[in-house]
Length: 263
Image (tube, rainbow, N blue to C red; front, side):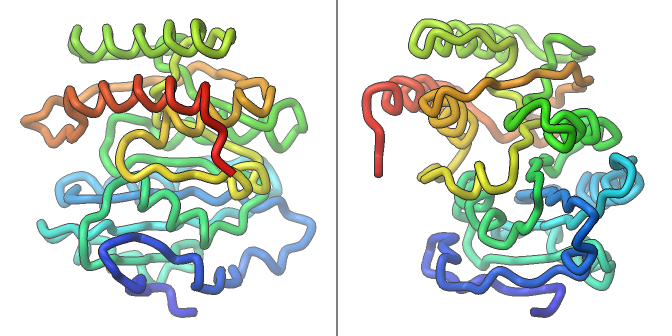
């Protein structure tokens, strides 16, 4: 399959019928493969720097990686920037014509990810790709199956009070509903054992990926391991896309999957 592909589009990012491509790194049978999935929508001013930082980021010794870029129907020139990387041997680039939401983009990326470890990276610069190895290492060492990068155990700058409050309330909701305490439920830095995340029946469409995957991991009685990370928040004027209604959806998602177990 070519490095750049337009996903079959029906208004949804449903790639269930698309064969997962073979990666050149997959031939290195003795080298664990890390899949880095990057859902992107209208990040023209950030995405080139983000991808370059991922490519420059250290990985644990003797590991290979594939970077799966999912352009979710961008309209601001992001697609043109991503094409700068289409011939890079570690990059796989996919597009959809219609913007369908971060959750659907992540689900599409999982259809293509072949990694022993799967980790997610946002297309902005709030998170530092040089810290991805901190999430990957415990899984490769067999110490964890799920690792979250905690902004509240590391260094957080610029997070406005409403976002801080919602994050803390989500932590409380997880503790109340699932009896487990984690310091940062809504972090975008999440890493999983590959077979585990590919086997979860995800249904997310937008930003509810985080509470859905948290709920389904905890319903499986798995432990979420946390590592401290750094975080530098941006504002709505700078391109931040999450809104108040997304917070409402996050709480509802935690409640929903606490009492309903699909499939």
